[in-house]
Every structure is written in C-alpha cells, then in structure tokens.
Amino acid sequence: MPVTSPSQPTVPSAQRPLWRDLIACAQLIGAVKAGASLSTALPQAATRGKWDASQRGAAQALSFAVLRHLGTARALLADLQPKPIHPPLLRDVLQTALALLLPDAPAHYAAHTVVNQAVEACKRTPSLRHAQGFANALLRRFVSRTADIEAVRMSTLEARWNHPDWWVQALQSAYPADWQSVLEVAQRQPAMTLRVNPRLQSRTAYQAALAACGLPCTAPDDPLLDQALILKQAVAVERLPGFERGWVSVQDAAAQYAAALLDVQPGQRVLDACAAPGGKTAHLLERCDCDLLALDKDAQRLRRVEDTLDRLGLQARTLAADAAHPATWWDGQPFDRILLDAPCSASGIARRHPDIRWLRRAADIPALAATQAALLDALWPLLRPGGKLLYVTCSVFPQEGVEQARAFLARYADAIASPAPGQLLPQEPAPDQTGDEPGPGAAIHSQDGFFYALFTKAS
Image (cartoon, rainbow, N blue to C red; front, side):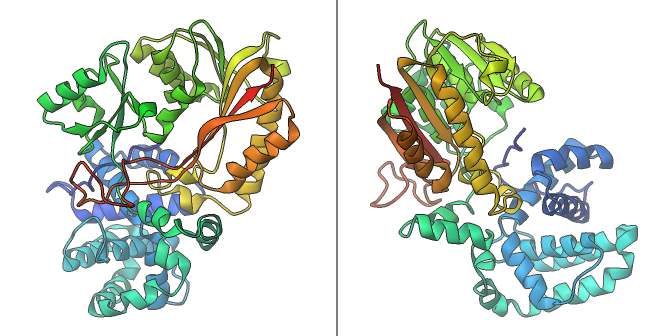
C-alpha cells in the first residue's frame, strides 16, 4: 500500500521532541537504503517502536523530506567525513540532520535546534551514545561553512538532482529539452487530486460541497478528466465530504485518463489485468455498467480492490491469478476491452513516493520491460476482433513506454494504434502560479508521469 504523502511536515509536539522524530526518520531511511519500500518499512517500524499516530505521521513527513534531499545530504556528509561512518544508524541520523539544515529543506527548523536534537538523539540511543561529540562537531562544522553547500551540491548529478546518476542520465537521453523540469517537479509536493463518483454526485455539486467545507479546488479543463478536482491544499480523506459514502476517491489526474481512453460500452466484457489497488477498476465501473473481471496475482492486494468497490457501491468479479498465464484462469470467452496497467519502475510517481528513486536500479528497467512484453503477448489473444487493449505504465522511461508500444506493433500485424496521449511527463504548477491562466510553458494542472498506448484489434 503506497504511503500517502503529507501536505506539510508534521511539527513535533511538546510531548514528542524533535530528537524522537530524527531517530524514527533515520530508521526509515536506513530501511529504504536496505531495499525496503517506505510503505513496508513505516508500519513495521511503527509496530516495533509502538509509535502513536502523531509520531508515525511525523516520521513519515520527515522521511519524505529527507528522501527528496538524500543525494545532497549524502554528498555533504562524504565531504565532511570521507571515512565510512559506523554504525549505519549514525550515518542516517547525520544525513537526516543535514537534509533538514539545507536552505531549501521543506521542514524549517532553526539550525541550532537541529544540531542540538541530533546530538540528543545520539545521547538517547544506546548504540550511538559514544558518537555525541562527533555528531556535535560535524554538524556545527557544517553550519559554520554553509557557503560551501553549492559547490558540493554541484559536484555530482546525484548531489545536484537528488536522483541516482543513472536515472538522471536516462532522462537526459530521453528528454533533452525536458529532463530538468521532470527532476525539478520531483522535488515539489504534489497536489491532491480527487475523482468524483458520477453515480452519486456531479462534479459541480461536489465542488460546491468542498467549498462549503472550506476546501477550494479547481477542475482541469480537459475532456478526459471530467471527474477530476484538484485541491488547493491536501487534507486527510476524513475531511472530504461523503468519502465514506463513496462520493469521491483520491486519484492522480494522469491515472484518470485510463477509463475515458478505454471507452467501455454498457454490457461489454472487460478485463482489468493487474487491478490492485483498484482505482482504475472503480473508475471504469463508475462510468459504465459492464461485466468486469478484476485480476491480480497478489491475493492480499486484491482485497484492497474489493474494499474500494465496497466503499463506492460498485461490483465486479475478482480473481487472484497471474495475467501472464491465461491458461490457469481464462474461460475461453474473449474480452471486448482489456486494461493492462502493467508492473513498471513507477518512475513517473517518484515525486509522490520519493523512496522509489533510491530503490530502483538501472538493471530493473530491462527486466520490467520483459515482463510487460510477456503480459502483452499473453493478453492480446484474449481480445475480441474490434476490441481495444489499453497499455498503461506509471513510468517515464521509454523502454516501458514508447519503445514497448513500438515493439508490440511490430510483433502483431492485427494491432492498430489508436489515438492516445502517449508519454505524459510529471508536472506541477509552480507554488506562485495562482491565476487561472498559466503562462507559456507552465504546467496546466498537477499530474504524475504516465504512458498510454491504445491498440485496436483488426476485425
């Protein structure tokens, strides 16, 4: 389950000083470095540490902030102390503190507070007590020479852009004119986008309901996003009117293109081949009464699809099975529509889940592309002549997008490319962009990075 990105870092309460949050954050950063996603590491750490909701929220918020600045923090620590730092928890406490001391850090703490609380964190942690003096000296040395930050920041691609070198190089190659914008957007807090359930509310009526609750929003001017509303300020879902009654869901604007593009007609037989966590499944059913099979090979994640449908008052057949092996689950009846939201690098949502950039490796991309091709090959024979298959990834890497679509068309003579957006890059209006009419080159609305290819099977 993805971790929800908070709108602002949680300020420590009087009952929970900053040093506790520093330690908690450092533990999570260490888990991500060891290969665990934040969505896995956070609940495990919270259970072990018996964190209350406030501490969990603060640890999550600080982790997002630090992960967005980890490249710079690592470079700064290496410059201050070239020798390896042990134990790893000490290294992660220091990198967390350095990230919070950066001029552009989203959590605005006074420098002396961060230094004092980092030292306190060492003092309060048995395995780090020996390092109190070291931590104090190193962080104070950094504070006294902040003029050197820019030189260190510009020393490597990772330090400058807070993404691994290979990631930056891949974007430079793929998008010579746009790679910097993609990386800059990844550093900004994404907006919270909603999808109104038209079976229960019109978008206009729900926008009015939000305004009555003091939650202003905007509606994207895009016919494919006719259910979308973008909040001016992110809030907990409990504050959204009618959320538990199914009036609305949280879903990024780029993800909302899928249902409109697939163009499901009433009564059609539809396969959602990799359905979890269920946002696109629900969106299809909100728009049209159809015979939908929601498939996912992870039974536990499939339960999230069922929970989502229950909340929205929708129904679909669900089945835990591997879409790549139809012989184990397909009944032989062809589908009119197939949605393949394929497993991918998730590089297009790295702004929303900043741990992704540190979890991925360059070797992951060709391996994922091979999985995507296998799924396309397995599902294409299941489509009725005249039917449509929508291939989707939340990726910005061409191997998972345009190159995958091009290779598929080369393999299948009966596949016809239909109009689709292709590659959508992440975008976020600048914080000071308050007018209704953005200037030339400005982002029109908030969205993640997605790729869409629509294929029609020749009759």
